[in-house]
Length: 262
Image (cartoon, rainbow, N blue to C red):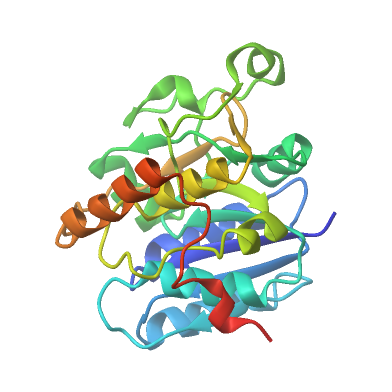
């Protein structure tokens, strides 16, 4: 199985550097790394270039012009270019545990997709991490919330993880799926613009297509850097789209990844 790690980012190279540093410490590296960049300036490009040579696979930087929050389109463009058959998706403000990639690979199963959990770093801990390039955190670290989510335990995960068909706990920042399943439902819905619900809407269509979700606990641990809450402009439209997908049990979106097919 070849894994493609897709990292979304937008104009926060300081956070992205911590993500890449934590990626360098992985017990198992992905087959390839793609950064889905929703219009960042040259500072992000320079950072990616400086880190690309540190990875045997290099880093594939996919960039699109800044035209507002267009996460769905940059993800579709990036995943269309992915050579792996299994996609692991994270955000560019997520510091990942040493076994993060290994855990997703270990739990990947045909007929399923995975949503993991996250621990939040408070503002003080986040700023300290950025200033000092700190990537090592644990359940005992100060300045974290959702502390239990930072516990890494294969034993406990066997009891606390579960398989289901509900949308609770959707986490696009800690998400993995088979590329063929993603293509089958036509990927992210690009009618959803602005922040919010794009990952839930995709998950709903994956479930409608016959897949089950693995809600992963105590594995694939990650730490979310504190930042200001994104603008929720457009959320009403996205909620309306999600409501229709749920009501009509839609599997496929019209405005999706197929436009980027080779």
